[in-house]
Image 1 (tube, rainbow, N blue to C red):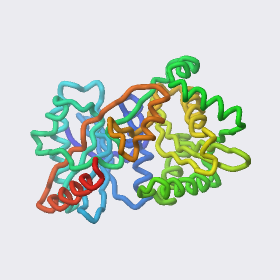
Image 2 (image 1 turned 180 degrees about the vertical axis):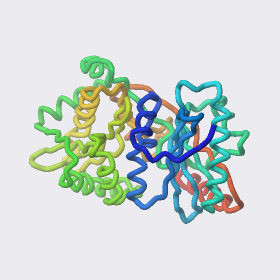
Image 3 (image 1 turned 90 degrees about the vertical axis):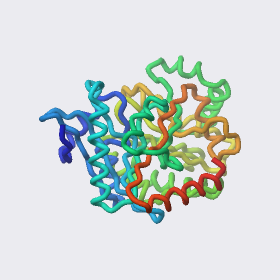
Image 4 (image 1 turned 135 degrees about the horizontal axis):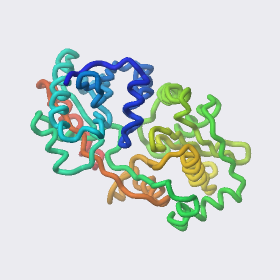
Length: 341
């Protein structure tokens, strides 16, 4: 087996679509998004002769606490290959060690797309990985809804309050518009910044959101769902459609018409659109477990009300490459304690 960089989009995407357990965070277009935001990336493939066995998008993250190589929800291994997977991963980990030293970063961080089990954790331990102090911006605990069922079945399995609020938003005259036009992006961002002030979290920049839209829109893999009420956009959501899933990646809502349950109708229309596109799952993205004081507690209740089940991924794994990693560990541990989670 050998590792080579992949420069052919079709080769990369064909491999991704053949594997059910894929993610837009390893897509070709997520790589393009990172390039457009100024990051250095590598699209690595593990080959046995000419057969592609695994892929991994690797991103160089430049941070004040210490630069590092990051693999978001990867690597992805061919479903045909199970017996040799440990050998393949060890080869990949060794490659990342060498690449990290060439790039003069202080550590490698992998956010695996593996269930959180002791058996999966053992995959990383022999190569020197350790639990990261915190997870990255991509959630490890998600909420996923099976949308292969009929619309009536999905609606029936929702929380009763959610069903009523969806119907109420419709009766109130809320209109849902689906688009990637910049006027809707600007409306989303205005509400996003209002949401930031209300809930006091660090916002994404306008250019960051725009770069994400631009990276995915030409392949019709992303859309902004906007709720219009009395000629105003009062809430928005950015949905990514990739593989067998639709992902609720960003959301925002205005406090002006807080009594109008437009966000419920937005996600219901997004679920219906995902079904039209042949998706099998609707991924609500990050939730929290048994943490009523967490900033995401209310959002978690909102997401879970649509029905579905919890999926917990293995915690982020760090591979220290030099003593500078200790600085990162101290800073991130301090942040975790300060935030209370």
